[in-house]
Amino acid sequence: MTSASPFATGLGLSALRGAALGEIDAVAALQRRTDRKYLIPLHQARVLVRLLADSHHVLDLAGRRTTRYLSTYFDTERLSAWHAHVQGRRRRWKVRTRLYAEDGLCRVEVKTKDGRGATVKHALHAPAGAYGGLDTRVAAFVDDVLQRCGVPVTAQDLTPAAEVRYVRAALADLDHGTRVTLDGALSCHRGDRSADLDPGHVLVETKGGVRPAPADRLLLRLGARPVSLSKYVVGQSLLIPGLPDNDVRRLARAYFTTRTPAEPLSERTPTA
Image 1 (cartoon, rainbow, N blue to C red):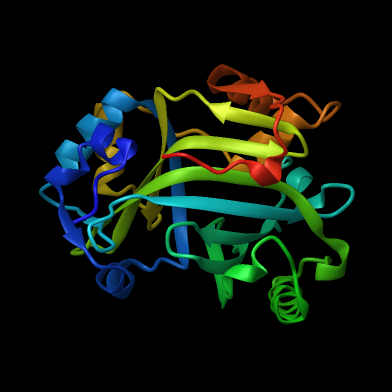
Image 2 (image 1 turned 30 degrees about the vertical axis):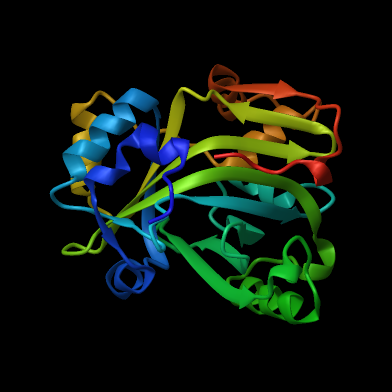
């Protein structure tokens, strides 16, 4: 078994039963789902994990129970995706490439909303070298999804807009097909500017059906309340001067700090 990351130790993940990726995807892949998000203190997240231990398994990859994620988000010159989310438009969308750092795996993801407000994720596996760009094959996939979803944007309109990095633990209720993710060490990067989530907080997401899952009810018992928070939207709100002030920015300022590091972004690596 590999040594536990500081985030895994802080959450007490060793108390949960492990499950392989195939087991979780078989019952809780959730490409179409309702997401609820919560920002809670780390000590409260540890309590949540303990309360979920009887019903949830944790994704275990050869003894590793957390994964470092790097996600590059793409947007138009006028930040059409950002504005669509902030304004709550019906046809909201995101395009990103995601790298699973320890495993060297890459996925291209296009996220849209269906007519009932549920998140629909469309994914394409790609070589690790495809991360951060939209090559011909990836562009064709993005164009196909956006066209089918009625989004008047093509891959040719998109350029890398921001990178988001974090460490994730993924939990799943294999009996009910719902999932819970816990993200820490979260940071957003654009050019030479960065915004970091307070290290004493964890972003929790529940992913399931229209009705709240058992994890949502536990979170309510712990005093947590859902928040409307997109990692990409938060990052852009904090890192681009002049964007309209809104509730997203006020929420972000309560939990995030911005910085301008001395070293180039390409030379930095995320830490657990």
